[in-house]
Image (cartoon, rainbow, N blue to C red; front, side, top):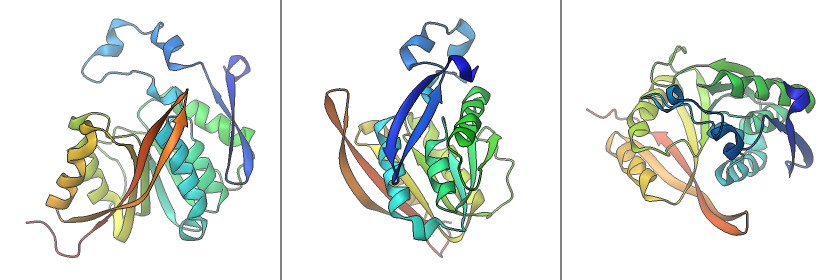
Length: 222
């Protein structure tokens, strides 16, 4: 499968990364069947390196000292670039995605880039996480609040697996569909602040991306 794949070259974290994928979103869209558009739609968003993902990997590189040696969860890891960048900085990363094909390419991208500490790749639905409670020091994701219905399941995932004192980093474009997620987190006892903001160029225009940092307050919501 990888032999026929496209290769994207991404320069970040002081090196050049070869990121393999089966094709772009438009090409794979043409191959989708009716079943892919059901309640658990399987639109292959994972084949693209979205602007939020690119800012996230820059942020992880800036935070190398904070992630080194830490247990980290990459939610919706897709092609695996952010997990690979973090693992190369010495983090102990679990890359989680719902789509098995995404994990196949993520694993190949790990091997192709000779990452120092290979992430553990896990296929899982974040609505029903089969993970040990409070086991991750850091959680991150890029562009994962692209539907409003994802906000509560993701918050429950964070509350289930984040260790006391841990942090969540969320790279999201500025758009209305995800704006309610930050108020929801605050309502349930999270401190949420904007860690950084950048206009990321993509295909002839720029997208404003924020990275939000969330941490659970000591007093539980009740």
